[in-house]
Length: 369
Image 1: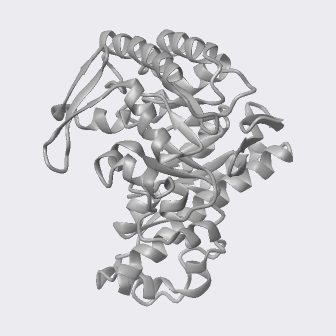
Image 2: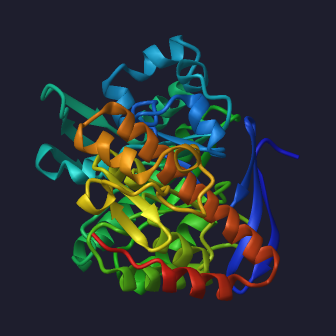
Image 3: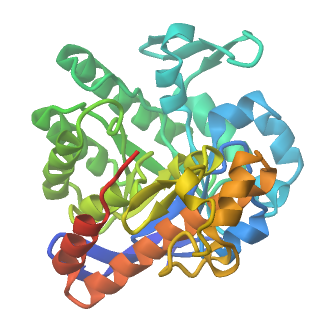
């Protein structure tokens, strides 16, 4: 068996379970990966992240290239040694960050020229450099450089898609390490024909896995799900599908039903830092006055450290007092919630009851701000 292989272990409808093998351990899918943008999952230690059941962590090449520098990370033994995480790591090439910095970058056929959001210094990112940065970082899964476009501009999406395809080829040509899996990325906005074309091109590159980019960037949820249905019919079943930057509970449930295997998002920890928590009935604002005298856990069915030990009243006290422990406890809960959800989805698929589980879950989980 090679360092990177994937096998589908069960299927129910279009949902499937699988195992993706990496040099730092096997990943059972569907799975949710906590985001450690700066080589740290905010407010948590690596040990705490592992205790939540997380197997894969995402870090960001753009941010780590700027600070502390990918060469410095390499000198420190790579990300695994630097951040003390023994499991698999995935790094994003930085394409999305450059999309979000539209007023500070200039894209051309050969790459991107951008100014650092830290100090305004000018930098140049090409496909070869994106690979070199990620090889220095040493992640198990690395991403090809892509261009994420605003979803509704067809002409620009077609241009960005072809550019993404050419960059994927150049990334493969630049890659030198055998202990890293390079994933190509599908683009194409909300246009079914572009998505089909992109899926066929990226699949033909025969990368060990395939990223799905350019979704959840301004389009409606219905449009996101529609594009996933298009891609499910086009992408090869024998490779894992990674939906980049999507991670709300309802989106995970809907996407697993459309053949997606891997998810990541800053949402759970960002909500935690803003005093919001997932529960089976939607999101809860932990600062709400109604929680002031509530002795119950955030959610009685949750088995995380936070729910096992602390009341809603205490969590509200921490939030209102702006104590740092609030972010830690709420991050523990929110991440465990999504990790448990993917485990429940695996069991539902293995038991042939994915549609029933999804209907029940989505009926109960109504997002409320």
